[in-house]
Amino acid sequence: MKAPKWRDLSDEELRQRIKELTEEIFNLRFQLSMGVAKNPSRVGQARRDLARARTILRERALGLTRTA
Image 1: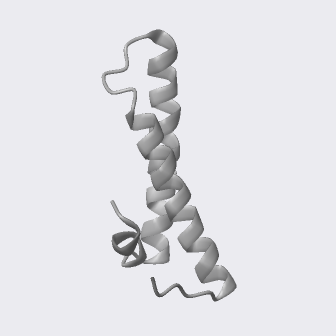
Image 2: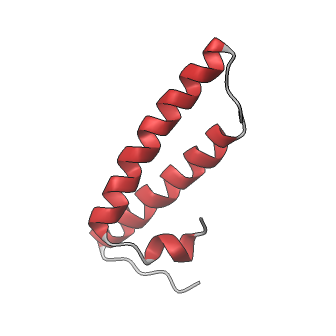
């Protein structure tokens, strides 16, 4: 999901997605270590999504707005 769609989510929805992504990353890393991961590149995607969600929450907490 791209950043504009992330920005449409409420703070509570973002927090829920952060929780889900954190769990997903943990599970994916565990699968990688066991050698049973179906899509190893998903770890990178999930980490980027997690960073986007945390960045947007932080911007809102600081009162910053982005227009681009």
